[in-house]
Each structure stands twice: as C-alpha cells, then as structure tokens.
Image (tube, rainbow, N blue to C red; front, side):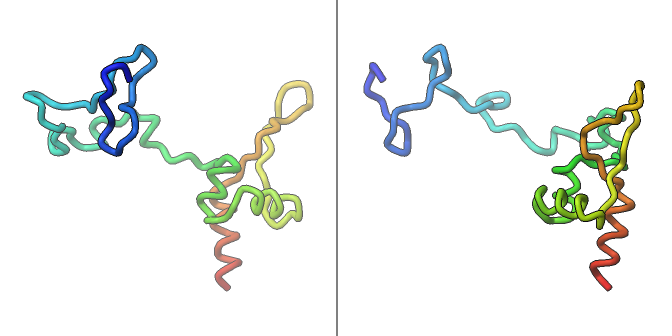
Length: 113
C-alpha cells in the first residue's frame, strides 16, 4: 500500500477494486447491527422461501442423505435410488438429476433396518 499501513494480521490491508479500504457494515452511531432488530425469519421470508421442495437436485439429495454426490450417482446407476424424470415436449426428458424426498426417506428406512 502506498501509505505503508498493514492489516491487523500483518499483511497489507484488504482493498476493493477501486483501492478503497474495506470496511465492515455498522449500524447507527458506529455500532454493530443488533440481531434483535431483524425480526422473525418468517416475517421477512418470501412465500417461495417458506415452501420446502419435494424434488431435490443431486447436491441437495446428497446433503439430505449425508453422502457425497458421487454416492448418489452410484445409487441411481445401480437402481437402488430412483430418479424423477421430467418429460419435455418432443419426447425428450430433462437431463437434470432430481430425486423425490419421499424416495430418499424410503432409502433411509431401508438402511436403518
């Protein structure tokens, strides 16, 4: 940096692309924002954020099961886990891998027994 100032950790101070030092967001009078002022998450969420999706992507299904996406791919390839196929006009189908949450729950029940 031209002024020779260093960041708290000893390195150069972080700057944005215009060369201005980065600053943390602060509330009124230089205070950190108060978590109690944010209100309820339900009040601030849009209706689409409140709906839990039934179909999960490959990554979401892997997170739901607690395994890697490659494990989910292997389970689908071995027909242990069924994917949902979405038909498209022209006789084709959506290429995105989608999995039904109920099917994932069924698989978990099989694993438990």
